[in-house]
Length: 408
Ligand code: SF4
Image 1: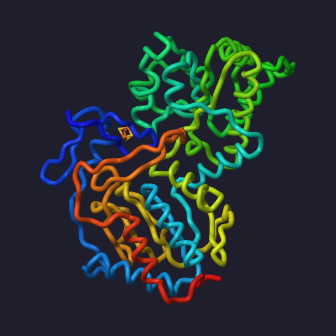
Image 2: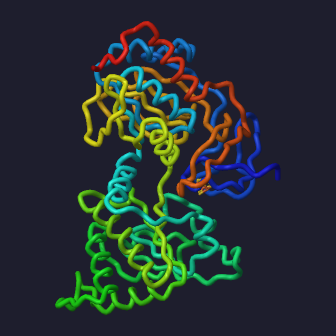
Image 3: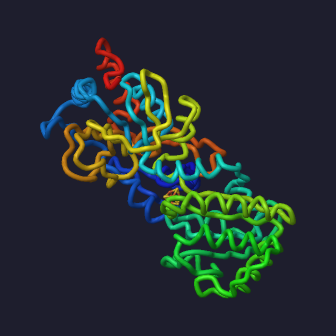
């Protein structure tokens, strides 16, 4: 196997893949998951189009600039790209007063609001793998991160010797993946009740009296038993995925989980590990925070960044999906789509510009879901396609001389 490469197709950023180029397409030859094997092979070429007519990508970028200049409420969305792409998106948004949002922005915002209201005590994938003897899965089986169990849970030989782990699930009993067979389903209930269940667990941990003997049919003794298991752990990790929790209770559930982790630290050691980060979401949050002082969604007004938590009507979307061939822009809005060559995410957009996939056709960098390392991406099957940043920079250059902040 050649040098191990990093996979960009979910927030885990597995860095042990064998990838070879065959007839111009990348193929996974070692490690990886079904998702990686499906997404690495991407055509080396595709045609840019303006209103269905074939065009050079630079002409398409120029046409996109003209439409952007005419738009009053543009948005740059999807944001499925590497760090350079996000940086270019922000520079373009600042130039034309656009809204900037990631397709997983709702989950990002829920996490942010929950942590703002009391802080968070988090750990990393490495710490989980090396230290955890108890893992609490709260409303998730990590299905959006296919190798989570293989990479982080199954290895029992850590830096500090062999380790037995207790794996406990509370919340919904979604389909069991083969690698999650060791999960004990301690408390089964709909994820909509997660906030309530975790508050009840906290109350029992704190020794508070409850007059009720059952909660949604579950005897209170089951909460007591679980509280004892959590307290007995030497290094526990609570895992969840905000994308699997829906409003209006998601934020409450996240805050309750962070509080549970903090309270368990009075007796032993616990930390949180929120999953997420798919489609470059962790990198998008990092770059937006570095450059605009806040994660997406945000909006520029007269060139200054502001929070944009409420949805705005938009009259033109620049939709970026360099990783997912099926991510669709919002319906009923004219779209300029910058996407991988095999994109099939909906009806033909007003303008389509194929872009190189970072980590497959072009080098780049992404931030892993635990926000610790920023991993470099290689280009095992280089293609003669522009990167997202190239196209966005060309669109911005096309705005030169035009009125800045057209939406103001
Ligand atoms: S789990 Fe995620 S990062 Fe790892 S190989 Fe699969 S898609 Fe790629």
